[in-house]
Structures are given as C-alpha cells and as structure tokens.
Image (cartoon, rainbow, N blue to C red; front, side):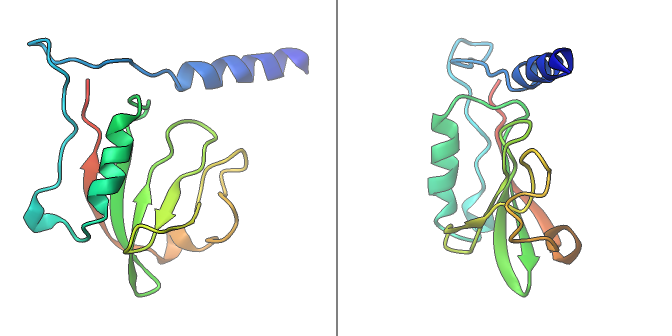
Amino acid sequence: MKQLIFLFCIAAVSCCGTKKNPVNVNGTKSAARQIPVSEKPSPCLDQLISRYTQEEKQNPPRKIYSYTYLGKTVYYVTAPCCDFFSDLFDNNCQLMGHPDGGITGRGDGKFPDFDKERTNEKLLWEDKRL
C-alpha cells in the first residue's frame, strides 16, 4: 500500500510541473492569448486573465470557458493540475464554487448537474505561453 501511495505522489508531482520564465524564440516573454474586445462578454475577465498570467504556467495550461448554466452566463476555469478543483464564476467573476476536480473528481458537490446542464460552450482564453 505504501508503494502505491508513493507512486501516486510521484505521478501527481510530475503532472503538475511548471515552467518558469517562459520565453519566445526571440528571447522575450511570451504572452497569453487575449480575448478580442469585441468578444469579451464581461470586463471582469481581464482581471481573471491577469491573475492567471502572473502565475507560473500550469500543466495543463489554464483555460476559461463561458457556458449558459441554469439560464445564466458562467465562466469555467480549468484546474491547474491533477486533483485540484476547477473554478466556476458568475457573470461578475464572483466565485460560485468548484463543479469538478479534487480527489473525488466531483468538486465541492455544489454543482452535481453542471456537466449535464451547461450549454453554449465557448473557449474565451487559453494560456499559450511557452
């Protein structure tokens, strides 16, 4: 059993590796893809994107999606790595909870129907830093 736990820990650490100071071929820091102003559904997304681009790049890279959930626009941010929670924000970028992720994969339990009820998926932003 101890060996299994040890192997799980090794796998989790290797999955969550990050790259420090990503740079382009020309030696400058690479920028994350920005949402064109005409496509931005809420001004608060700039704050979320700024927060994520100031952190080290995650593996897998963070993404922000918009969905319609229970008749309202919500923003879903993918988890930074294995066994972490994803985040669900309302249209004002107020954290509503965590629909999935964590050790069980079920998030915080507040949104058990999120996968089934969400519609109108749109990828709004993806961290494209190298």
